[in-house]
Image (cartoon, rainbow, N blue to C red; front, side):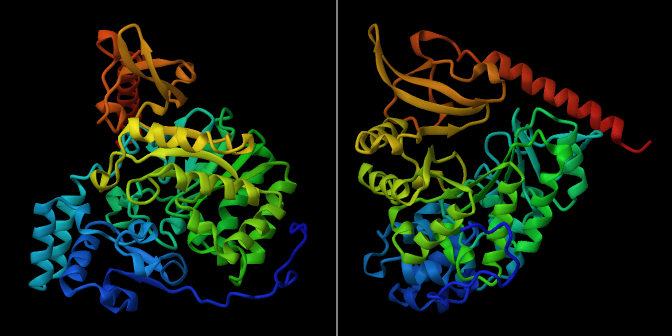
Length: 467
């Protein structure tokens, strides 16, 4: 079935799921029926955590994906509802005191801000190193970390159908404009792309661009189809909507229009990939979730799947085997297993690299070749995407074998390097170079890169400043 020639109303399907989108946030915690099984103190603690870390969940997730007979252990519950251990004991106690004495919203917000700024809200140099300049001015809502790929943050797409408790972009959702990426000026990023012909791929991200109505999404996608941007070969959309609100592609009023837009992208000769975040196999079990996958694929778009490995949610080989097998069966392409980033409630969710590698290999060995398109465990660190490729014994030393899958300097990609084996290390900056070397091969060049970036930014910003 082709959607490229559709107009609103042309495609009619059996509306098997007539559920209306309903969202719950922090103010609704006392009113979510399923949470009444918790004690009053437990709900207060949840409200305290939700004042610091963003909380948003919708009726589909609550009613269809969570096993309420198995909370708090249920993985989807852990994935979407704040847990007290996500804050330090001191921070949790402070926030609970404020909630219990019904402090003003301003006082609660001020206390939350102090905690938020201590949680590494923008890891991997997103603010300092990734935002490009145009005429000496930062391009709002744009990141350009890797040569061929630009990330675009549409202003209207900086929320999600539900929030993941582990999300490394949690700072987008806490209401602090200084910590938020958002683009409202189409002209600026289009001009930036036109003068950077090395860019081959544009990734619309957020938040979740699929929260936007079809007409708004079209305003960001259609300019990318301009022949003047013929060097942009691939359009990617990072989204959790096929898992958290599959109705977006099936029963929403503009679902058909969304699919028609996808077909138009394909008809333009460009590749369209939905970078779909599936964290647990349960997210693919409902009939409407599978119907969403089917309809997306019929437009000619490709679904590539990715998720971080997070403790309490998917930290077992069995979970990933089930996930990858079902994705392949439905026609999606397993793409990445990420390492949970060093931000937000990282201590609650982190899995040491050694354990992550065991889980990845344990699952990878049990899927067919079609499932072995997946790469991982991968750290999206400041210098680039670093793959933990294995553990080896080199002479008398046990080491992690690492390599870049993407890097700020393309010359680093694919070059193996080694770190001393450490059972507890959970991130790149917790690793030490193997064989007594003082630093990893890329570090001197990376220091020069950051110094050069800072110098260029200061020069261009000075030149752009009004006299």
